[in-house]
Length: 158
Image (cartoon, rainbow, N blue to C red):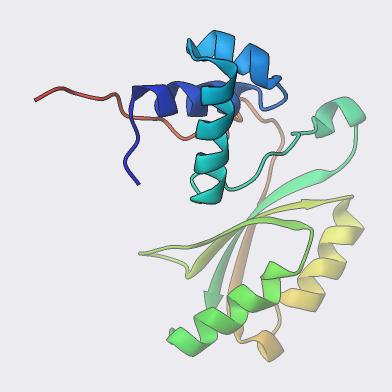
């Protein structure tokens, strides 16, 4: 899908605050309200906008533990990779899952209530029965930046 400058402005504004009303979004994007609504619907229907969510600050709630986990499977095959991805897809504590190269096969970002919850999850997921050979976990002690935003290239004229 080709994006013009108006689409990029809308995406940039929505990535900053998706709770803006259509009227406010249109005003900030320098569009009319009907044009803005039509463009946002097109971006949603085409899959460019995957979903709109609220990001909760766990630190303010004083709840939870973030773990970054490297996973190496016992065999590097398409079937094992797909099986592992399917295994973690339905686990709410797994916030993100990346297949990576080189190094481990996967890097996961987990959010669990506490250390006992991490241990229970690790015993359930990271076992030989799930073809996991090696697990290396890092626990976050401080988050200095969190910006879930896709940088949008500017339009250049030829």
